[in-house]
Image (cartoon, rainbow, N blue to C red):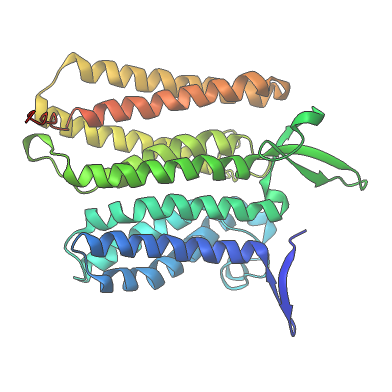
Length: 336
């Protein structure tokens, strides 16, 4: 049950809704602060706010309807009646990306890549708060039962009421993701400020790298987190890998291709590129194999999920190594 934060008249304000609104506000405040501090126009951020909010809601709802069509009486009801149903967070990424591109096409900024970079840290913190909001409903509970009494509390477990009125403890998927994304937020902030000063090889673009690293780190986290959920969204044509996992996998592949192309242009082809691609596919293969095992053998999760996390980390590290190949070496300061 979703607890009410405040009730006045016939209107109820829920804690989860407050946190989601706070997440959106924090995201755009951080974006505006970073963008205007690096010669961006505040009008671009103010235009981005309504566009991203509208497109994110519509696309998130559209994806949820596509994956859970049985929950709606019709497509029109899904897109017009928001009193029930749900959303797929992937739609927020697509909506925000489209909004940034529209802001650029309308001429409010000539630095689309920089705007994406400024969005990245705020997006990480915003998603973390959205995940925290799930603590107030049952979506925070994963499919893994936690039966050890010493572990039956946050951050690892959260209580859920069973159909017979009892209480069981399940893995607190979204709360754990909230903690991990807080770390990602601080890493991105540091990376953002370092990236603004660090040189690149052979006129490689400086803008856009923070956004690409955000997509890399978030996708590697989400691939594992989504596997632990009991309510993942699956495409009608595929009941094995969730929609989120498919999108995250394609995103990671796209980022690796981008940095491979840039690295080849900056350094020429070398065996290093082949080795990093091999490491990438071996790590992806490990994630896929472990996903298969944990779905076929649910009681193997104590082995599968830590191992899957390590394989997912291998994917991120192979992309990071490819990215470092386009960075110019830093000059050492001369001793006075």
